[in-house]
Figure 1 (cartoon, rainbow, N blue to C red):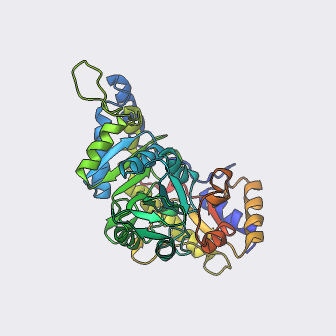
Figure 2: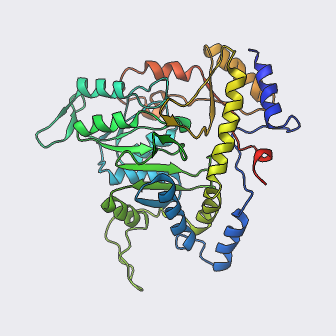
Figure 3: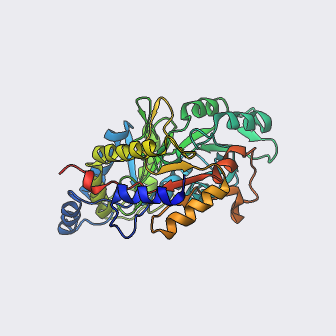
Length: 387
């Protein structure tokens, strides 16, 4: 299929008269201004305010997690989650090379060292088989019950898989495997708000889950993140460490740990609450768009990426898989020249200079996807929302 034909179809789907079709623009159409103005009128615009608490309550209702802790963005949520998981300086965290750089950066922020294992082609997320092969080949469980990488001599403290573009990966298999090796699973669900494995929302199957509310996400508050967990002790410590470890007191400033100023401001939380109220409608709108794309590409040599059976994706970013690198590049050049924003999948983390030294497994699938995947415009279509 010619690249220009695809570009014309995307323009027709979003409105031919639009000068520029973004990849994923936010939509603000209900209570966003009302709630933000409410925080201004209340003067509680920082990390103390009713909307922060409401946001956390809404996140527990949506995900089914027992606890949710609001943070300033997804990267801080990832960093704090890894600290809560017990990652210490020089210890290793297994993750996937095909991910946004924040995943690997958070490991470094926590003092950890990333180790990269391959992904599955049908989920774009960490492969349980690749993880199992890496662990069986390179790792042992010590007498202390710690998973040790025999090659590096380091403890493997955590595993950090990511639900790529909102498509759920085989998280249950990963959790079961990590349990055998006493590895804590932190679920990077940053892109998957509204995605499910069976009846379980992403983010709640590992020990700790993390979400992002960046400007390009399905639900946004400009910046913002959330940690979810079913572990009360972890939740309490997350709240404590995200608020500078301040011991409650009417006037004294007492802090009992080296901690972080990661609490989400009330201004952002107000925006997030208004957005979360529309989550169901957003997801339905995006699923309809995915169906339109699927129908268009059915008889072409381009694969429209779909959710795996037994899962439900939020279709945050609709995804195409081209036959080779040349076809991928041709479409990227044609679409962007035509003012239709498209993007390739990320460059593999082990190819970036700061992570080029990290240990890797066989990355055959990640390399294959890197040369073929393109994201196409996936915004909520305003003219299809309910009035």
